[in-house]
Amino acid sequence: MICDDSIFIRSAISRMLETDPGIRVVARVANGEAAIAELSRQSVDVLVLDIEMPVMDGLTALPLLLRADPTLRIIMASTLTTRGADVALRALHLGAADYLPKPSSAAIQDESFKRELLAKVRGLARLRQTSKALPGAAPTTRTALPALRPASRQRAQLLAIGSSTGGPQALFTFIQGLGKALPVPVVLTQHMPKTFTPILADHLNKLGAMPCAEAIHGEKLAPGCIYLAPGDQHLMVDQIPGGLAVRLTSDAPENFCRPSVDPMLRSANLACSGRVLVAMLTGMGHDGLDGTRGIINAGGTAIAQDEATSVVWGMPGAIAQAGLCHAVLPLNRLAAKVRDLLEMKTL
Image (cartoon, helix red, strand yellow):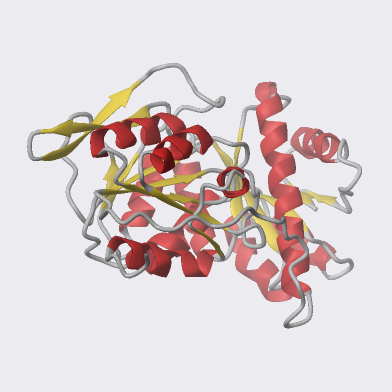
């Protein structure tokens, strides 16, 4: 279902979705009240929900829609503004499954927007079907993997996290699970527009786990703190006397992304002589594969979110299928594995 007060946006999104033969748009409505009424008439897997609408806005409708169908997956369609980012990320805390930065009407036909829209709708529909399966049923997707690698016998100096499609919701779970006082600094690259990254850092900071902020060029990394790559800049790690420091660059995008995970991992590998623990979360594409391979070749360790709990098993799937992982785990088990590895409890 598509819920947006603009008939142009409803039509444009419908056309994009229906280019995929596996997707059918069952309803197009203009406000949250109409979406609730439509949901009572038919089954919906995924709802693309605009935030600002007359009669009933998206944030007001969100809890009412989830009360009507707790398994419904809702994507909040947000404008590329600070307010839009804040509302979209608050909606994730209230039960939305993901968000979608909505370009202007003139740019709505952008291919990157279409790719992201299709990936999120397909992935969230799969997760909804999995959640509705009988208890104990096998996951709907399970890709055969190469043998897992032993963990490094060297203590990691840095935790490096990569994420993309479906990442914010996964990060809330993962970061909260890590808790406080990790013995190493944490660097994080999430594919996200620059208007969104300060808001994401603030929301991660408010989880009550480790302090989190957008990384600042030249700052020294401190253990137990999270440094988020700012939108439209690569986060690099440099070795300095007595520790590690952030370097931000506007180098060309890699894997069509800036920030990109690969340059962060390459620089971390060099700065830490391979003593890096990589955690790869849900995301489209293969950003991070080359950087992870370098870290593994230098003696580091990598873990990945599993296919069944990822919205899109692109980035974690790439390193898992390349045989680079020590563990491939459901989202709710990743944080405990990270703590064990950092404390050298798993060899």
